[in-house]
Amino acid sequence: MYYKMTFDVFQKLVLELISCLQSQCLNLVRPHLEIKKIVTIVFYKFANGHSATHMADHFNMGASTIWKYVDIVCDAFTSI
Image 1 (cartoon, rainbow, N blue to C red):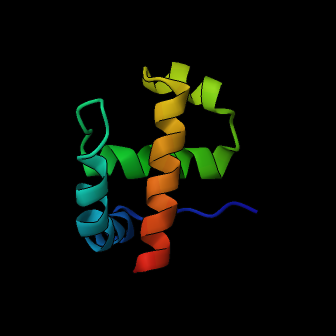
Image 2: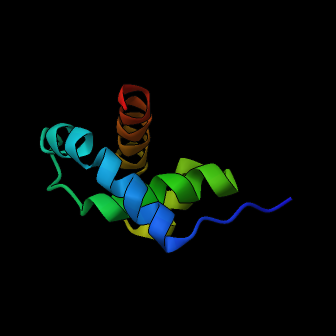
Image 3: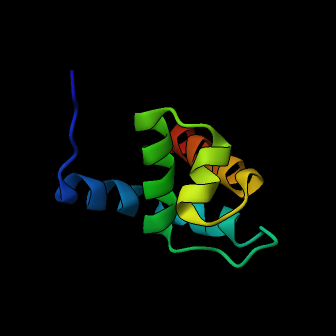
């Protein structure tokens, strides 16, 4: 079974998460990415189940950064 998300739904979700993510992403050592890119990275991880190492190679960032963004987005989901 495949589930797809329309761009409109993605945009609405980003708008819901933006306030939570902006405040938490500013505290990271690396300059924060665009919120849309963070949500895209995390959804890609959820959808494909790849390891953080694979994701790091794919998105050109460290595996620990991937995990930080996953934690931040999951926390944001629980707060909305």
